[in-house]
Image (tube, rainbow, N blue to C red; front, side, top):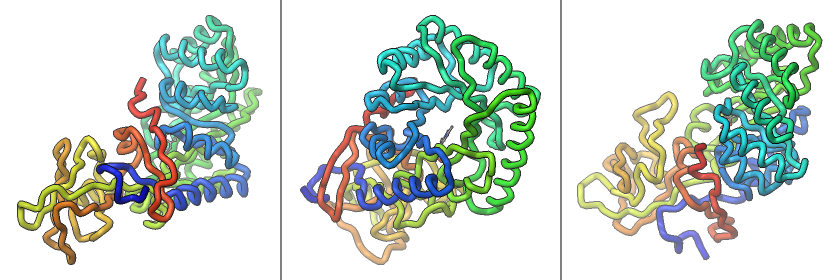
Length: 367
Ligand SMILES: Cc1ncc(COP(=O)(O)O)c(C=O)c1O
């Protein structure tokens, strides 16, 4: 089947670009001796995760137990829940994954509170399993993560003292780094922060096997942080318009687009496509909020400026070419991870021919 035969809107993945993205990251990590535990929040698909593991990923990162349950079908050696997991039911579900894997899958959770540590230890004991723990440090995003060395060290001590927990090391997420401007200085700041905190933890007598960070906008610079030994990029599998905007990829590295159909040209200077806010995310472009909800690849002068649930409004008054009802257009998403969560399936093409389709099995797994 070729790309023109599927009903729209659908999410098309160029398999050549997708495979190259996976390989480039795997090679970079190998070259710099970084463990790769990619974040599955972007693709939400066990098949994509299996392709990452096949290329040497040490494990898979998720945000929520529901995503962990979906990824557990692969029985990866490691599942990292890189999110403060609060709630007895959620911890019971994570323990069940460990039990069901009969020791094949180890689960690590990143935390920043005594509350979380105590609750995870209780869940571990109740289920007779052990959880790895990464203690989270705020590296500049000011979202989660401890902000002082004293607090960090105190939580490391608590984790060491609690039954059922194994201290794996430290985690941080450099989500404040969105583009290349000042990126080396930002990495030097993180390197200094880590050095200070690691020194204190090691001086107190604790080994720190893992220092986990990394993101897609900063991926090429991860090796500038000497203490970092693991990265968790997510978006890199497909890339998106934000990744181009931040300078971490080129247009030709973007593997995923939404293919839509022009359903109306009744208003002069405008086309309406058959996807709106239930197909694309409402995320604006980082640093360019007026640049619309996605880029029309057929003519970059078009402005995708408004959405209803099932209608996308595109101003084509500045375009060189004309569009008619029935035309198919390709939209490069601003933020692919959120758009992916809205789709049931992804369709993988090579040179315009459908090669495989896969379920986005962890879409909507928010708990
Ligand atoms: C904790 C954590 N780690 C890793 C990532 C991956 O970041 P990116 O998609 O920029 O690669 C995210 C993204 O939200 C995250 O929240």
